[in-house]
Every structure is written in C-alpha cells, then in structure tokens.
Image 1 (tube, rainbow, N blue to C red):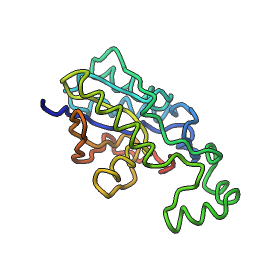
Image 2 (spheres, rainbow, N blue to C red):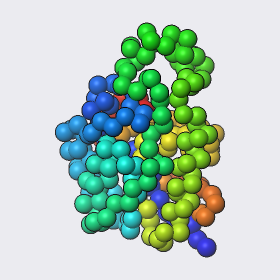
Image 3 (cartoon, rainbow, N blue to C red):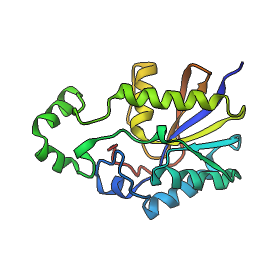
Image 4 (cartoon, helix red, strand yellow):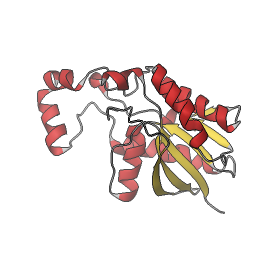
Length: 200
C-alpha cells in the first residue's frame, strides 16, 4: 500500500491572532484580512487535492472553505482531533496579561520552554492528530489538504523530527501518510504576508 500525500496547513489570521491573544480551544473567527489573504492564497495551492479535512474551529473551517472553493471541492470533512491544544486559563490572554497572571509558569515557559501545567501536553496533541491523519489514509487515495493549527502541527513535527519552528498563518508542511506512520517533508508558505503573532 502506497503512502498518501498530504499538506498540513495552519489557518489564516484570526481576530485573536491580530490582538495577540492565546486561542487554544476558544473559537474566534478569521479577521477580514485573514479571510482575504486565505482567498488570495488559494490559487497558490497546487490543484492536486481530492479531499479537504479541517479542524471544526471557525478560524480553520473558514480557511478550509476559502481554499476548497478555489480547488473546486464542495464538501469539507471536519475532525475534532485536529483542534488547537487546550490552554486552560491562558486562553484569551495576551502575553502581558499571562505574564502578570502566571509569573512562575511564564518564567518556565520563556526560559526553559516548559509548558504550563494547564496546557494540553504535546504527547496528547500528537496522539490525536496522528490518529486522525493515519485514519484519513484509508478514506481516499488522492492528495489530502489538512487545515489545522500551529500547536498540533508543530508538536507533530517535534515528535517526528526532533525539531520545530514557528508556523505562520497559511504555512504548511508536506507529509506522506501511511496506515500507521507519517513522514514529514518540506515546509511551504502560501502567502507573502506575515499575519501572525505566534500565539497558539
């Protein structure tokens, strides 16, 4: 059985991206700019995809819809396992607000890269996304476009390759999905605009 080609892409700019707020499982929509940039990025995608799979959160679903329209794909499949990491009480806060509210956790996060205890663990995020993608291997044979979030995609990259870097809005990672494994390939951006804050 051959692997299935996939592109794992982060959603366009959301309202909370623009405000510099941690999002997690909260559900802010895209900004008008984010929607416009997604529509402008859509023609840059290769016209090879036969299926679009998306997180159900608005910012991902709206991005998926904009991209699917350009690709001529009518139906978008939704999978809750592709949502952003849960961030507990940090959701909705700016960096300044989090620094004041969680002094010790902020210090560990910024100096030692230790996630706050309220956050969903990287292992949990990897497990659910890995399961969603490997199950998608058997759904169709054509290339798969996956619209998700920075947190789970970068956690998966860290798990599979040992390295990760900030994923900007409408930046993706190509992958080969097998029934029980995933191989990550190169990264690619589909917009020249840096409309992101880096917050999950």
